[in-house]
Image 1 (cartoon, rainbow, N blue to C red):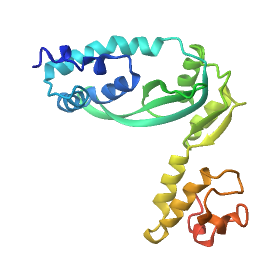
Image 2: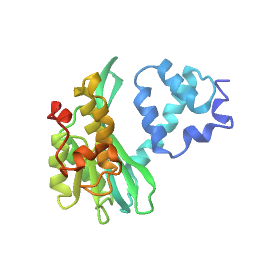
Image 3: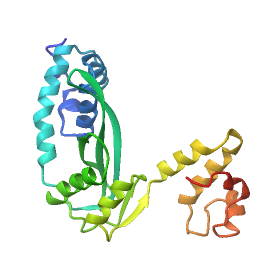
Image 4: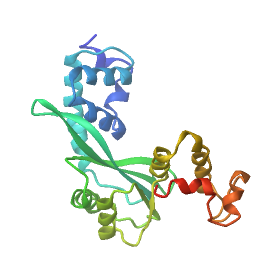
Length: 231
């Protein structure tokens, strides 16, 4: 089973040039062979052993290097930038690292993971270095209309140095998550109403009538929303 696992009908799903698979594997390979085996078993829908895990990791390394060095397309309309916290085994112990990730939506509406990079911590310098490398490989932003990020201040400053003219928006997923953390159980209705803001047809016209109390003032929130002043 271990020797032949890569020759089964599913190997293309593991060794394909899909960068999402690489990111998934790279994020787990450094933790432990057992956890890596579980991740790989999910992909190939079969049990694997430590030898197979090591073989797959080595096979992916060359493809990952090519992926990080390839010429990038400049066909993106939207960018989504975020840092993902992962645990990686380094020098005999598990340490936490950040993976800087760049996702894009092309002019044809196709969503892609553009690239990623493991760093010790998020900051203006690490984000600027990450973005400059992708700019130098072809991602100049000729068709960029919007860049979405979380509230990481260093990332926002880095964007100002590289794509200052491109519109920037705080990620709604992060906004809603921050709001949810501040609400009491009795205030959960506010979360569902807040979701209607980004679904609104215009800035002053919500798409559903359940937020008419707020829409009547065209931006004046209901009193129950004032309990969470900072989201």
